[in-house]
Length: 356
Image 1 (cartoon, helix red, strand yellow):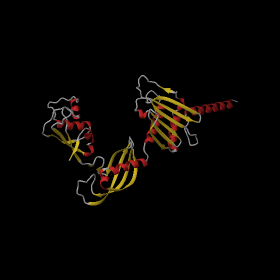
Image 2: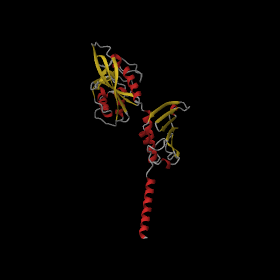
Image 3: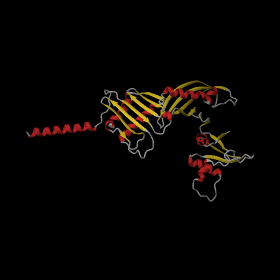
């Protein structure tokens, strides 16, 4: 009798443990489950009118992201096929973070958040149709909802990413209009496409083509002998924009310079103008026994702000007279310097120009 009683107690404890495990372990989607549907809608807040409503829809075999204007017209639409593994990974985030347990709205912190807009997250499965509304930021919401939102944002980024066909059209159109190929290029051939492990994602497309003369860029002002020259060009694309293009590993086609070479730059300020380096120096708080020269300030500025080493910094007197009209007339002098061509972009952005 006592033995039977003990067996009953053990059996009861086993059942309780198994029941607790079932409650604690979230259900995960497998290949035999149904096909949930996910809607993720972003709206409101301070956005341009043509981006008023953004909506992601995820079904079993594809993800669609639509951007609509305030008047309801579609501004942009993106669609990507999903593998079973990709679809399952999205849906499982909802199950793993127990989406059904959350409230309908999360508006905590409304007195601390500016008008960032709202996000509606809707999950529809066999026995569930639930929408949770949150602010379009991750603050003031449960960690599980944050993980769900992060997965949905990741899915949007994936859906907007161009496929290889679109990338090739973008890269090839760019190459055809670039100076080297436009001058004497022919027989453009696709070689490969690779994705760099970077953030943002960088796509690198490699091509081969022939040139009828040696050299790079537009050589129309040069006397060149005709010689068929094979080239390889690698084009890097980020967010549908050609970020860089390198020919034969040594010519920067976008910047038009030999990699590792030096470039001479010049800058002619305007009357009464404060240059970037002068403003930087005035706000530095440094005290000198001897006030540094413009050349010293320029050298120190680019080393400190950009980590760029500029050399041969000089002031060149141009002569002539000026009307003295502030911010209209150019000064009667200019600055000149030398910099590694691969590092000159920040200077060009600040108004420096390339000189022969």
